[in-house]
Image (cartoon, rainbow, N blue to C red):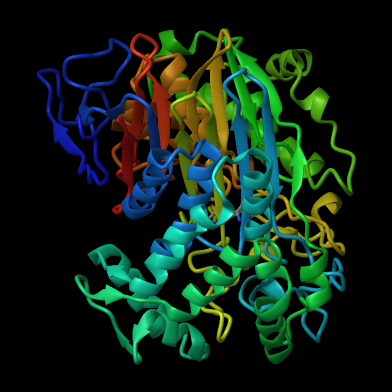
Amino acid sequence: MPVSGRRIVPQRLIPLALLTAAAIGCQSTVGTPSPAIGLTAVVSAPPVRADRGMVVSSNFRASQVGREILRAGGNAVDAAVATGFALAVTHPSAGNIGGGGFMVVRFPDGNATAIDFREKAPLSAHARMFLDQAGEYSRAIHHNSHLAVGVPGTVAGFAKAQAAYGKLPWERVVEPAVDLAGEGFVLTRSLAGSMARIVEGYPQYPATVAAFSNGGVPFAAGEVFRQPDLAATLARIMRHGHDGFYRGETARLLAAEMRRGGGMITEADLARYEAKERTPVRGTYRGYDILGMPPPSSGGIAVVQMLNILEGYDLGAMGHNSAEYIHHLTEAMRLAFRDRASLVADMDFVDVPAERLTSKAYAAELRDGIDVARAGASAPSDVELPLPYESQETTHFSVVDADGMAVSVTYTLEQGYGSKIVVPGAGFLLNNEMGDFNANPGLTTVDGLIGTEPNTARPEQRMLSSMTPSILARDGELVAVIGSPGGRTIINSVLQVILNIVEFDMNIQEAVDAKRLHHQWLPDRIRIEAGGVTAQTVRELTDMGHTVVVRGSQGRANSIMIDARTGERLGAPDARAPDSGAAGHN
Ligand code: DON
């Protein structure tokens, strides 16, 4: 059965017989109604099935590149690296070679590893580098300047992972991206629209305007988009691997742009950058094993911590997105985000009590502080802050191969199109990841930044992240590959996809489609996706003392699950990303 690439899945609201006017949406699949599901349902399309391998990403062309690599005899690491390079061409808002991220790999024998290719602070970085000349914190410097650019890690991470665990020659996995950039591809409406916004919004960066427009005129959907400078940079990477980015022509061009724009990164910073192999965070939940990313990501620890707390309650019996369910999740989220803010940072620089944070004993202590009927008893959010905006412009992709090797990758430029700075002559975007360091020691901003000491900028430290590439297993068998973009919401999106599988027996597409919610301790608000709860549920939560905001969408959780009966790979592209796609290998 040819299982193909692109599947755009508009969610159709199907009123079931039990619908009431007050009900505004939970999700189920017709044919498998769950008693735990609320009063309305959105029909999820069935997941994409394939016998051997699966690649799911936010861009269908990149997923197809990964599938081609599987067909060519590559394993899941080869396919993931090829998909990652292809996303740098076809999904420029988040796919990247100028950013960084994390990869969790589970081998068919159950062993696992994690590759940390998070950006680093340059050698001349310091905790007060985001203050202006008057000594005031400057959001513009912190997030939108050459000083906001961290030393990129993606190429080092991909090179390290592929050399250690891939099977194909390096050139073979980079080549499809070189071709896509050089020969071009037809623009979708969504990508043409997002590029037009960058072209119109950043005239101060001529190389950016040149890269994403046709001589200054935005491209229209249906036109062919070619990136010759990016193709040349990717070709150097294809020929010289790690050094094709961190030394020579590419490094020179990047350092020159830093000097021109007042940034800190030098050729010495680039030459010193190394990706790191780390031991994944491990946890358990009701017989399932969770593999997650350790610091500098906070994601693995926080997900395990919340699952440990929630294991003490019968969430399944509460009903999906019922007030009781949302209350319990929210209280666990408060606790995990409080600990994240005060204790978690790059473990190469700061002692992180990871073992305690992920222990069942600590979770039991925390659970004792939770009031099952009243908001905020365990971790009061006594600072009032507005809800920060979380862009979705990171990207997650999942890969499983015929042998059962699983790869979970989340990588990013931080905000959409990162710093918006394209390196002149090299055609790639630079991240603005330094914005993930705390603004200034002691400073808590209206955006929810927290001025705790561990995550302040130091030379070569990696900034704290929420990216949470995860893998679920049970009894030694692979179950699912999960992750999402969305800033701090990532952690909660991954938590909920796991709970949807374990507690509510959802298939992977239902688990991805189901409406999600987010609380991050500060500010004290629960944000629930539009259509995710009934008005009655909001009233019940408010009565418990919660502040609830129902709006927007949360994450793009491109995931894969294994059919336990047939062994098939089930791909679930997240329809919240318009160009997402699952490509199956049969
Ligand atoms: O590493 C992180 O947690 C963030 N830089 C991820 C950013 C993201 O998901 C999109 N938006 N802020």
